[in-house]
Every structure is written in structure tokens, then in C-alpha cells.
Length: 75
Figure 1 (cartoon, rainbow, N blue to C red):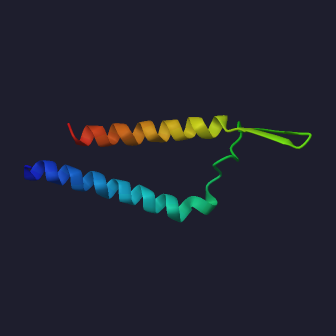
Figure 2: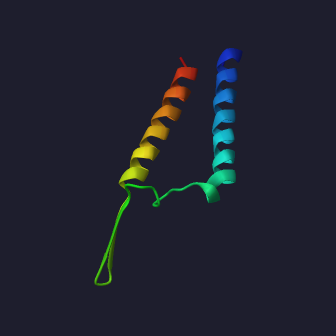
Figure 3: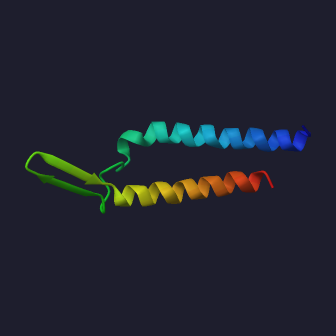
């Protein structure tokens, strides 16, 4: 493995560790999962239905950005 490829792998691993650390630090203050405006919750006769629409959209956008950044590092 050439040293430039090894450098890119180490940068990608560092970014993943940084993002994981930030999420763990900020998790109690984040307004999700399940509490964003747009998340639907229905209660009736002992039945609870929860549809996290806004949370799914936010997670999809964040994952798309992260995957694109990582893939660009390896080009």
C-alpha cells in the first residue's frame, strides 16, 4: 500500500472518530431522535404509533454527506 493511500485511510479513520466523539459528547443536547418537528406520534386506546419522518430525513442527509466526503478522500 503506497504511503498516500495509507494517509487517506488514516484521515478517514480520524474523521470517523472525531464525528463519533462529537456525537457522544453532544447526544444529551440533541433534539432527536424522535423529538423533531415532523415526527408523528399517535396514541389511542392503548396503541402507540410512532413515525419518525423528520428524523429519517435528517439521518439520510447526514449519512449522504459523510459517505460523499469519505468517497472523495479515496479518489
